[in-house]
Image (cartoon, rainbow, N blue to C red; front, top):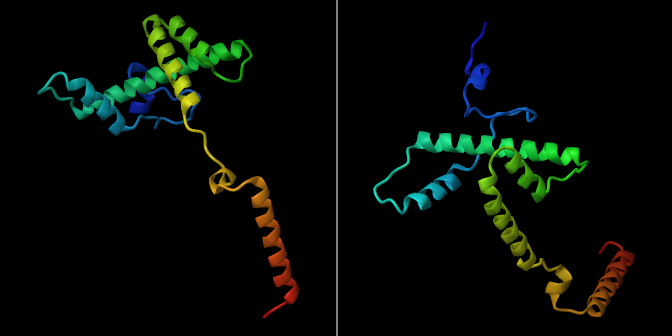
Length: 156
C-alpha cells in the first residue's frame, strides 16, 4: 500500500481540493497575498508573517474559493443556469454557513459593477483618427486607386 502525501489529502482539512479540475496546482499570486498581509499588519508594527504561514493562508483561500464556487455551480445547475451569478454565490455562502460574508460580498460586487459602468470605453481606430467616416472612406478609395494603378503598371 503506497501512502504518499497526495493519497492522504483527505486527512488534511487544508489540502487543496482538485475534484473536477484534474489539477492540484491552483494558487493565488504570492505577491498579491503578501501585499494584503502587509496592509493588514501595518496597524501592528513589529509583527511579521512567516512565509509558511502565508503559503498556508493561500492554500486555505484556494480551498475556500473552490468550496464556494462548487456550491454556487451546483445551485446554478439546479436552476438550469449556465452562468454562475451573484445570487448563486450569495445562496452558496448562506447554505455553507457563511452568512456573515454575504453583505460584504454583495457590496463589493455592486462596487465592481459600478466601476465597469464608469470605466473608459475603448475607442476604435476610426474614432482615434479624428476624421469623419466620409473622409476615411475617401482616403480608402484613394489608396485603392493608387494600388490598382501600381498593379496595372506591372514590374518597375
